[in-house]
Length: 500
Ligand code: ZN
Image (cartoon, rainbow, N blue to C red; front, side, top):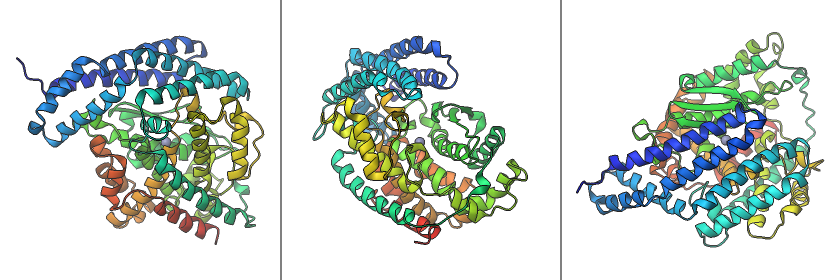
């Protein structure tokens, strides 16, 4: 009788990984290259692949392999033991969903996404409504299939931020909501009359793209293992450590938004390029949660990109990109311009002070949807009321309201909280990086962004799923994740900028 080994397990995991990667290629193509008439067939292709992947991930052969390896746990080293435990976790979760359900969900996701594209373009919520109703029903069904304690939302949250619970998010978000609303009120009460005339006019797309590529290269993003493309919804995807792609978008009236988008997605890409090559095609070369992934993107986009030290170095690069336009603009002016605080309608354009408020609104709505306290038809009214309450803004139409985000069209419910958690993790981790790396801000100010990347690689990227997100944060910072470092960061930065 042959003994089952880790090598056998890795063969099966590699097949599952490759199916995942193939689906990611198809999804990347769908958002970057595919002509509109390809949509229906692409939906079928993805549904077929996701059913195949599901079959492999729930096979009795995999179950037998895991049982055999679990019986020999004492012979495994710590990485191997972790691989077995993580694969068991994935197996148990996958087996909760029958293949027929996975196929139905995948088809509803593709149809939902395509309906949403048109509905958003035409600001036509009723056209999207039946799709969203179906997707919400499917997610409620998924929650029942997964099983949960407390709120059914917990079952969905688990897919994105393992171990996180509604019971933990409620007090955390209440604290963030209160403090950030208060901070925003103090800022917007002020009559700063800051002038940003120099931001007027148009900023050529090719120059924006070149600047983005330069900063990405300085961050250590390996372009021989990556690409920067254009897509309406910026994202990062990876098929392997050697192929990690990002997309960005360009606004001719804003010289900064493409750069910050590239730095954000670049932060994700550094994570995926920094995963442990020894364990490629296994769960050990994956991130343990979306929040910890977002920690990286937020740190690069906001703490670095919207920080003063960064602009000390990159104002000359900005001047080079747009010759003659910025000769009289100072680092201080740039710092003020990229940190303007203004309650607004669109999450992805929100400043750091208001961003989490957008997330909290979505969390409240999703919770009600999944707990059966809000009908899909009532989303626009509920959305608009919450925007008034949290941000004091009137939503003119659903395109600028509840149709703005892609997530629900993919049936992704439970995802949004990870953005706010990413913000919290980023400030807490950066505090630790400042302690660990002497002269870190001087490095940034001289364009040496690699010391931070290296620190992140050791503290986060290489770990993969050997630790959970809270364990990673605690190991690096000495404390459980919390809201205080982020709130202190906001107070310090914006207190100085707005002389509060
Ligand atoms: Zn992100």
